[in-house]
Length: 262
Length: 319
Image (cartoon, rainbow over all chains, first blue to last red; front, side, top):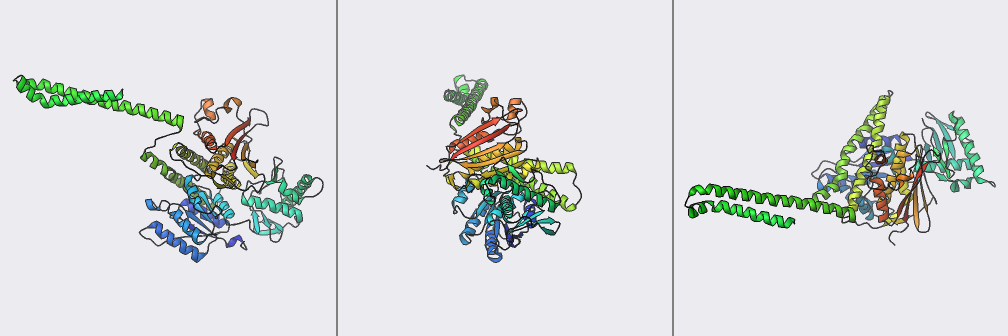
């Protein structure tokens, strides 16, 4: 795992890299602290071939942490699926490099399956519709590149530092440590934050959280700890979290995190 | 019947042409009078025209009848004889129609960024318009995808082999895609898998993704405030349940919900807001992989009103 996600460099390989849709993705990547780098081949008679050579050179030269690769390059019939050819070459040379492929279609029909079928099923390659929101692109990259980082930003106002087992409330640029959240309370919050980081709608079931509670009634003990976490974070942030805020009970199945807005 | 007409028309046409050619000879030799050429020419021309007309009509009737038979065959047996041009169009359909949507979507995001960096407060009407574009894009995309899957299902050469699939990863992707859409209308999506380390199944990942996307899309549209997607399994099957706290589906409509082209507006005699293909395709795809898609709903003023779609698929479709 990297020391910090700020190190993550993403290589963007797309002949429409200056289009509005790609610009929005690049902006979102930068906001998240990633460093996007765009492949610009020297102009040549064959667009696809130029991109292939420039991409392989850039990977070797820049050692990115992940690649965003388009399937289609230009309008030439031969380049319609050039991205898949480039993908095969990258996977052959760099089998552990995570690659997110931009496809032109909503859900991968047979073409996706065909492309994936040629790879090992656990190759770090994923497919995403080019129309996906920039937020979704970032989420998919996060998951593809690795597990949750040492510091998980929960929205704009809470930071869970896994390495030092400390939770911070953010006031602008200032980080205020919330030292009351320690031990099992920290583990509960870390578990919820990691699930949220993987997928904002993911609930953590009681079975996973009850290992951080004690006594004859672990569910009740868990409920008390969650109430305490919400209270101390509320004090640090100057708000009072109601039942449907911050950490919410999902139909008596488990809990999930809902970062405070703003 | 049509072949007989064609033959008769052809004979009449040939007779007409023959009359035209022979008119000068018949006129001069038989009657020794060139003036008789003119009526024979007329007769020949009329015969040729009638013959040609009969042949054309019989060809037209034939093609209409054959088209009707093709349609019947396609409805009854799932077979459709796409022309090469049509097939090529559908191969590029997603790309060709996707391009204008990508442009619209890109411009919308660009405009949001410009407004954000301008720092001034955005006019709520402008914000609403941008949100509408953002929300309708996946809707449009899904319709395109539905049409494409329908073409694949009805095409003669659909071959797919089961692949290792992580259902929890598929659900995570779909929920991520719809979380923002749901948020814009103040709705929330939660999901979980039981057991949480769910593992692999052998199935068609694209088909499952397509089915669940349709179900989640519906749920987000009709929910009051919550949507839940859960993944579980028994010894032989994995089960994906998509639940929403919407008004529910009255029992008299439940039997039509999977019908081709049915939408709630059909029952109310209103303009359709969607194609009504989603659930039809979803159930067809599930059956194709020997799975099932069922509905469970409580409608009305009962505060427990909700709708659940339950997709049950074999853990190993290759067996």
